[in-house]
Length: 312
Image (tube, rainbow, N blue to C red; front, side, top):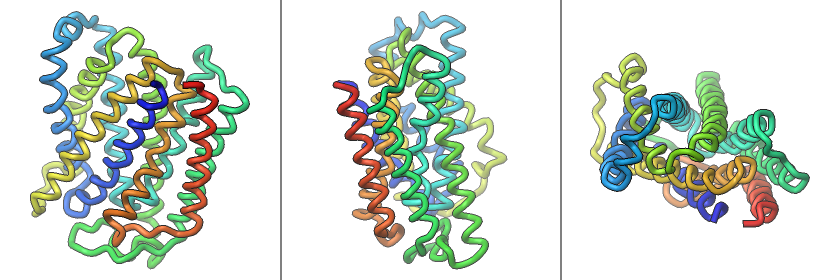
C-alpha cells in the first residue's frame, strides 16, 4: 500500500507540473500558485471539517504550529519556487530536479532518526538521482521547440539561443533545485507529524497555512500585477492545485505507513510523469532527446529497485 500511494502521489504531482506549464504561458508563477492553493483548499477544507472536525478542533498549539510551518515551507516557498522553475525553464528542464528530493529527505531521515539506507535502497536512490541529473543535462543542452504567445515564458529561445535565454533556464533550474530541498525537508517533517495527526487533517491545515503565507508574500512577487489571460489559464491553475493537494494527501498517507527513505524515491518518479505527459499534450513546448530518454530509463530503474527493496 505504501508503494501504491507513493506512485499515485508521483502521478498527480507530475500532472500538476504540466498544468502549471500551460497556465504560466499566460499568468505569472505567483498568481498560478495562489489560484492553485485556493482551489485545493476549497476542495479539501469542507471534507476535513465534515469528517474530522473533532480532530481539527483538538489540535494542540504545538502541533498546529508545526503543521503551519510545514505548510509555509511546502506551499508558500516550495510551490513558488517550483512554479517559477517550470515557468522559466519548462517542464523537461525543471521537473527532473525534483528527482533529487530523496537525497534531501534521506539525509535528514538518516541523520536525525533511526531510519537507515540499505544497499539496495541506496542503489535505487542513487539511480533516481543520476537519472534526474541526466534529464537535467539533456534539458540544458537541447534547443527549445516552438513556444509562442505573449505569456510563453522562456519562449522559442529558451534553450541556448541567447545568453538571456540561458540565464532564464539556469535560474529556472536553480529554483527547481531549491524547491526540491524544501520538498525533501517536508517529507521528513511530514513523517514526524503524521504519526500524531490524521493525514487529511495535516494536509488541510498545512494547505491553509501555506495559502495565507502565499497571499502575504504574493504582492511583491507579482500577485497584484494585472494580466490579460484566457479562462483556460485559470482552469489549468485550478487543476494544478487540485492535483497537487491530492498528491500531498497521498504522500502523507504513504509516510504514515512507511519510512521516508522508501516513500521519497518513489514520489520522485513525478518528473518522468511530467515529461511523458508533456510529450503527449504540450509537445510543441517540450522536446524529447536521446539523453532525456536515457535519464528517464535510469530513473525508472531506480524506482523499481526502491519498490522491490521496500517489500510493499
